[in-house]
Image (tube, each protein chain N blue to C red):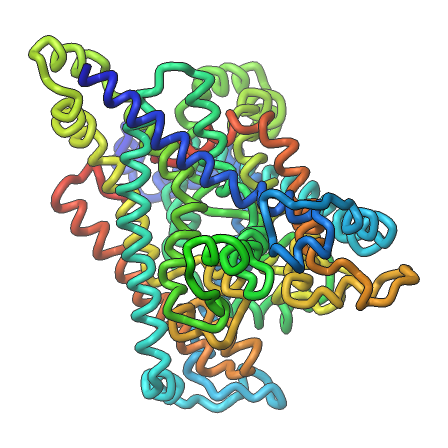
Length: 325
Length: 289
């Protein structure tokens, strides 16, 4: 409470009221342009992000376009019962979690190693060349990635079946029909596409480490390995925590393009390529089953939200500075 | 000794992985300039025996669809990125002002959109039923791409940390209103963050295919990514719009596929050396919360 407010308090109710409204008028006069600046952006978020949140109720309706969404019958948890009554619910949850688990591990281990290696490169030009090459896949769309993968895996003309496998004396593989290969393919593609991004993140963190630590370690005769183990890695932990936290917070979401475009939406592969996002999409657009699609979407939103909050809470308890919020 | 070994290992690993990152692009290119019969015989290959630009010839002669989709992509990217930078900086700057009444409430309003969303079904139904966005150019610009709460926070941090509050205060003492301060002081000072976010949004708009996939059925509005998306499983799509005298069976479809994908990434590859540095800087800024 400021001195002004105290004075107002002391000199009675009427005057307080007047000074407050004057204060408000002053603040409005001073700040209204800032609120006007924010208006378009806030309106967009209200429409694009908040209205759909209220749309979660669709999952509890039996949507009938003839009468409109609002007038459709409420069906309680029927849509969820149907969703979890199928084998699909288990399959998409398992796939989503396993893939994201693998991505979190690989997108930490490989980029941290690469960042440490990159830090050993002394020539700036070389650093830039390596960064450019590693980041190139990060820049292109999943549609283009699907073409690149297709050039390798096309069953009649792909590089794998026509060149590499014969060279190794192996039989051609019907890549787009055989689901058992896809966990490896998708993990490989994801690592290929995103390792450059994470390498840059960790490399920036390493660059920020005070050089004096290393000087001191060298004077004490510490080997390179020991320097990495006892200086670089511990000082990378905050960055790694934030990145892993992001990953865990998003563990119920997947890159729709990776799981839809790269396998070319092949129906034969769904046992290993179907994740929650592709299921929601297919249920809505290919099966026209709004109820199931909305139910899966709500399942994803709620569990995903709880996971962010819980993982952040755990990190906060353990080290406040490393938490996201 | 120890250090020399480390350095050799580092360089070797980095060289190998860098090559692995680039190889698929090379395969795409070499396959696109191969003779169709070579591909039928040898498959997509790094070393085509016979070179032919037949696929590019065809694409250039029958380029109506490609030129149009390029036009759509460029239009959407330019308009989308400009609008998006405008909206995001106009929101981020007031949020960066610590003296703004209710600033925290608005910041939370933005932050919550990063944590939670309604998902595809309500979003799709709202945009199609309520706003009738289906098969309009707005479908490629507005849904989900225009603003990103995370980017707004990056910009807010930039404004809060790099723009000295004294400048703002002395300007208002000189009688400049908040709008004047924003347009003639804040904006010029924030070129670095505008460049970074502009680059990110340009890439996002250039690469987006999802909005086209769900909101467009009319091929006339397809962006380049949407055309590519159709062609990979259905080359015939390209022939819809052809004025070629050749029948479809005579087309070098195997190489055309690779050529059109290559045409799709040429601008990205060509511009890459110029913005590589900003890209790295942007990733670093984004990673530091």
